[in-house]
Amino acid sequence: MPLTPEEFNQLAHKEDIQRLESKIDDLADAFTQMLTIMDNSAKKSKDIEVELVSNQAAHDRFETRITDLEKANL
Image 1 (spheres, rainbow, N blue to C red):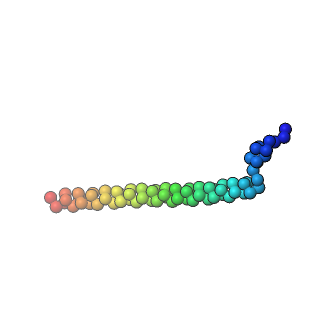
Image 2: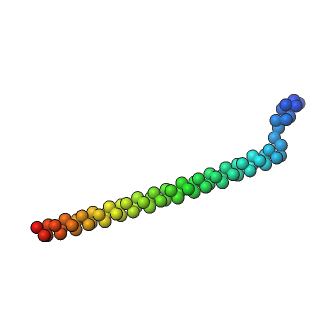
Image 3: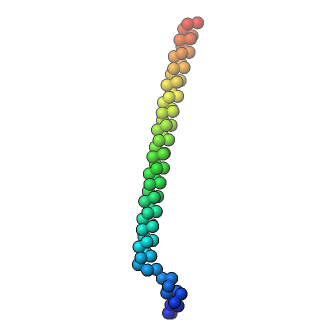
């Protein structure tokens, strides 16, 4: 089945494929950067959560000590 001139003009050229490959590579790089940013954000969030738990434990210890001192002074 022969191609019509319109169909022939729609065929991809070597340059078209190279531009598409370049765009795909750029997209892959951007996606990799986005994943890296998300991983860093998740790590920072986890670090903050650990620090929050640590601070809460320290506050609980201080509260216990203060309560014990208050009881001792009464």
